[in-house]
Amino acid sequence: MSDSPAAPSAYEVLGVSATVSQEELRRAYRRLARLTHPDTGGTAAAFQAVQNAWEQVGDPEDRARYDRGESLVMDAVSGESGHGGFSATVHPTRSTARGATVRARSYGHPGGRARERFLKLMREWMGRGTDHADPYDPALVRSAPREIRMLLAEALAEEATARAVSGLGIGFTIWNDVAVHPATDAKLDHIVLGPAGLFAIRSADWGSEVKLAKGELVGPAIGRDEEPFHELYNAAKSFGRQAGVRFTGLIVVVPDDALAVPLDVVQRGRLSGATVVRRSLLPKILRDGADAAGRASVDRAFELRPRLQEAVRFV
Image (cartoon, rainbow, N blue to C red; front, side):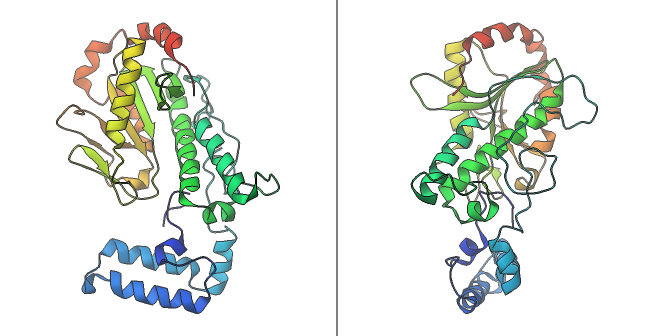
């Protein structure tokens, strides 16, 4: 089971409230184990998810640790502390490579809008805007409604991408949390300009696996009305039109364990060339270009920097 705040909790997987008795929990597990078993019409993935959930809360002591958030070990923000949990501090320009002295130029606050919205909704959910409890406490985050957890997952994903690309070097410029147009709430998570071109990037974490199907990203946690690639395409097109630039490529970045292959590329249609990629591979894609054949047309991409600096507005 993923440690992402967007991932279903063990109780959600088992279809029960976090307050049920241990006996009720056991009955729910046994029922779902029968329903999801491949021999009775279920799937291996669903059956494994039920087993993983039971391993986390099936024993009363394990359940108590789970409820305290002790099993949620994630230093998803600073990338250096071993404490786990969720921090309110982000270091978007700190390189993950020790000894690196030259970093990409980075502007804006990655994940900033998602953090603000998470904190607002979390405090409202905690009780009339109270500041008494730690909104990043892992146990509290796990018990929050999914819409709130998704905002934190969004912020963490954008911050992780910013860290991943910060070590690309001085030849790269990164703008984070960029407003698409004054008349819309849409944004581009990241715009990256480098020798291989100009890229519009979305950082995403749905808390489950995703895959490319018929030119769009799909997955158990992606809503039917969600079209991640089309949304990125429309946002990039709108920004490009008002800024007078054209993007070399569109990239959706996901956690490494969310994609079965290192990367996948849309082959046909207006989204042809759009790429979904594991986060660890993103720096290489940005250095080399998603499509080496298009590299010759962007040799003078750095001339775009002043134009972009003038056009970019942050959300």
